[in-house]
Length: 337
Image (cartoon, rainbow, N blue to C red; front, side, top):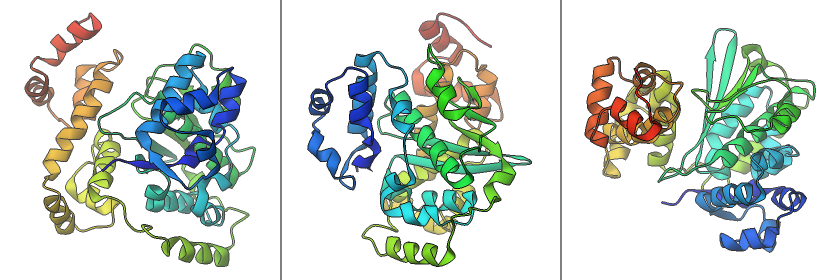
């Protein structure tokens, strides 16, 4: 099944494209879209179409921050049918739970997880496509939009501890600094926003419990509100939890609100096993890590859930026909430990 996204994900595309000297209609046409389609925010398009549009627009304009520029003026209203529900959540934690619950209504490739450890929390965010695509612009748009949501709920003076991207830094950090106003880390092990854990439970002064109940009833009445492909949701959960060492079938089932047997039965109905999906996600993640020379092979083994580097080496050789060190020597021109 092709993952779909609301066309509202392209809000501000026209303005940014024109500002950078592009002909937006020409770029839209190249991926099978039109300017008039952008006037219908609830229309759904393939995620791959939106990703291609952003990456190509960034390439042609020579602007590495195309997606982030689109995020700069995002509003709560741009979340469509769940906007009212989000704006009346009592805390950021409840707002995040709401997005996680209804994320398939916004973007079927969106993976989101709140990881709380001690005094810090990480709002981890990924976009998944099959097959994997370059999506620097899509990820920066998604993280920029998540930041704007946090700021809308916590106030204009709120700042995170850091914003983390797995890709390399652009030549110019001006837009990143202007939007986030905090430490920005590139080449990170995750994509996400690090915040004080206390911010998760800070009161939202706009929250109205009665309005929240009304909005949830409305959203739950919509076709497909409680759907979402089990296969897709499991893949996204593995993608987020594997680097944290938590991608067990028990943890994944719990994150989806299912018991283990129900999850296994649903996977069987789709003709796959949990191990199949773990292996699939490992294949997607490993090349991202291998291409980053800052990651030692031991660290990569940890991130993929291998307690022993030798187990990782054997798995990699089966998948790619050579050892991890040989792969790096061939692709990066260097050997690593």
